[in-house]
Length: 196
Image 1 (spheres, rainbow, N blue to C red):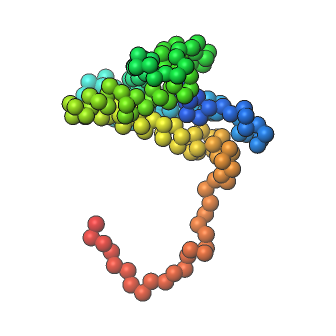
Image 2 (cartoon, helix red, strand yellow):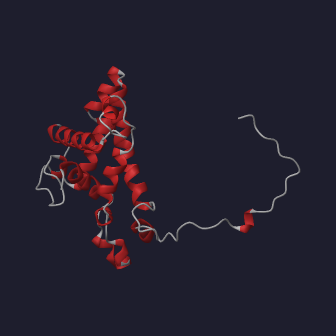
Image 3 (cartoon, rainbow, N blue to C red):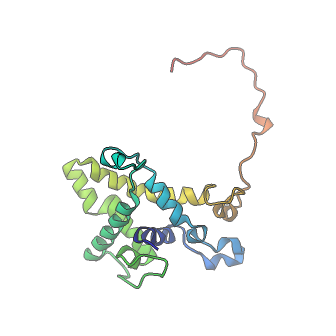
């Protein structure tokens, strides 16, 4: 497994972990995001966020590969968390499915604390406030959006096989439905189009 995907695997396992304690509700509630290859999908989505321009476009890239940069930023945040003594459990041995970097060596809860360092509590947000640097603000945005993107991918249809997803099964979501007749049939006497 690559460094990038291994770091994203550690991230996914923190956001959508396996939950063996929920087996009494049904076996569909046990698997986490890694069982649905959410780490691979998340890497693809992050790499597709920004269209390529300049030298990257000249080299034939359609999009800017941001996933390796995000993996590196997660490791930087993990180091900051440990140096500031905010990690509750410190470093451990990474799971075989993870990369060997600092982020992957943190506990799941400490990994989420490291993401918070990128978003609002660490050096990057402090520098973004002082320097008014758009690039640093982008790091804050991406850190905050990464958790939401992971959850929406998991509970969306992209992790499924066309029949729904693992998240749909866990949430007992039946899938898209046609509109309901109860909200249809209101007649209008007149309709005026807006200028926009």
